[in-house]
Image (cartoon, rainbow, N blue to C red; front, side, top):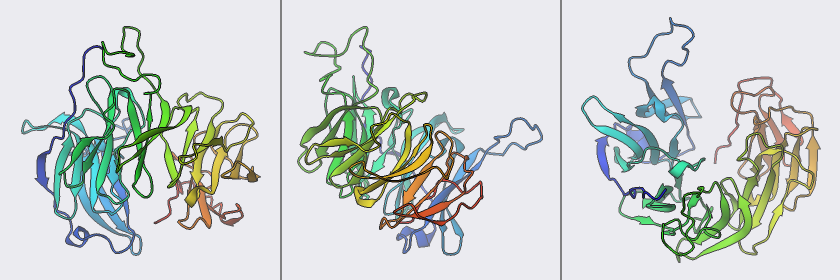
Length: 388
């Protein structure tokens, strides 16, 4: 559109005190996990289902040693799972749908709760997390929990911004006329990978040389993989291949991504591994056309486990060069119903279903796919996640 968007600034408003339990303010001695309990009426077929007094959800931290649940903050039920914990467990970003409260306050946007001081504030006054309609966006924390990166719309494009956890530094990190989106921090926090259409569209500002703006212009849904050195600001393109999904770091020098998933009816997709130092990119899911879903990489990017959803369906384990280690058709999963997670040392991998489709329950295998636990036949055992 030739009509510019208003640039999103750092709001730094709507401060409020949050009653955080004292033993959570100074951090956690051992890994806990978080869950959300939602109080809302979801069963509209049974009119006898009571309507809650307020449709809210409560974020809890759970001590896995004894099951003790500690409430952290109460949010509107519409927030859902748009809750983003910092790695240190002391900060929590979350999204609130725009709404007018009873006292006349217009709330909505991205907020930050600092558990150490028990204060919540609004970072960005935005109507949603998908800038200009680009999907699969979420704020992402740096590994040291000091900085939050997020893609925001500017006048005619999308840039990646960062804000420090204490709000003292807010900056446009990419500041380019193209669409820059899907930021991802490297494990050491030194680099930021993202997707951009700047190779084909250096600017979307009307009237500028080589602009892509025009009456027939179509906003991008993907682009090429770029990496920024956060300290120097140097940006370089890693691969000319078109990405239609977010990149994921598997080591400090390797980035993975899956192509072909933007079309939910697609019959094939590929998992790729890019080395940002050498610039080499290779497909690791084999030459045969197939729909490969749910890729989970072992620590260090040495192995990948994924669900081959095409017939003959199978769970496949490959090394970083794409060599097939083992394939098994012992377990059946729905088309988009496979989830896996590796142990921190990469010795074990746990896998099962997702989105409520979990016919196998929980399965745990060694890194050669030798099963040591399961299937459990517990249909509600879904989406495993190892503690750090």
